[in-house]
Length: 358
Image 1 (cartoon, rainbow, N blue to C red):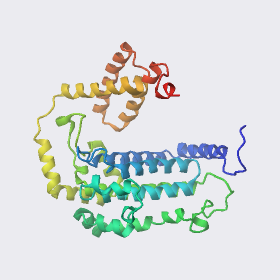
Image 2 (image 1 turned 90 degrees about the vertical axis):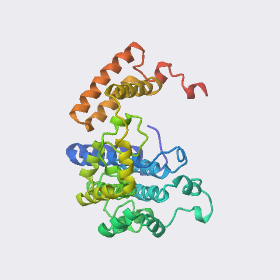
Image 3 (image 1 turned 90 degrees about the horizontal axis):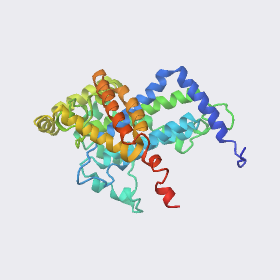
């Protein structure tokens, strides 16, 4: 076995914790489902941040993307027993998620994010302080009225306990977590439950701020009827909205719906979309199959693509599931006939970029 420096926190102990964590999830399937559902919801909310010709690749989307990375990292740290570090990553999720709304509050994030994005040394390029962030967030009338009614700032203040993990504020916020435990990573059910509850609270706050900034996020409409899958608009599918409705506190979702119904910009945009001519079902299906063929041919291959599709249809209605399964069979036949079952790298015998550039 490979030797390591005289460390107590060893990979083998991480694997032991992982096994115990997986057993816990197996015996508590609802808990695992909570983590998965809220993760899907957080990923979905990124779709409501507009991507325009002006701001594409500008970096305005970076705070959200980085927060999504931190959310995944936090989960990975937690399942290996690095709970203190998992809480620290949740703090980053919270801050970055709020910065996503902060920099885009006036729809000019492609400009306002630049100094911070480029890590400049100037004072004005520093990550803004909490009071400044909330002052800017509350300049949005939707966020201000919602905050006054439901106390979003208080929810944030309650989550400020995460700061204690960053600065190790005593025994409770150390790697010992205030417990009489050994000096290595161990599985701690109570701490894991605490992490899950905090994880959900962070997600609720961040997605609520995004939905208040972009209230079209609660408008249910069959967008694909107008534009198919090449959807350039910052909207969510009906099943994503229903997942959010189930996840958020009931009064939160109802209030955001009221805001959307009375938001002139949201209603004007919806009117514009609804007045577009419908795409035929054949046009939609042709568009989808063309896109999927490109993914299969130039990337993952049919086998990996199919696994992803099967996983995704778990979130779809019965009617949509049948459509997708029929499409999978059409593409399976195409992939077999055109030698597209494996990924492009495998089809080329591993002659990818890294092999050719040694």
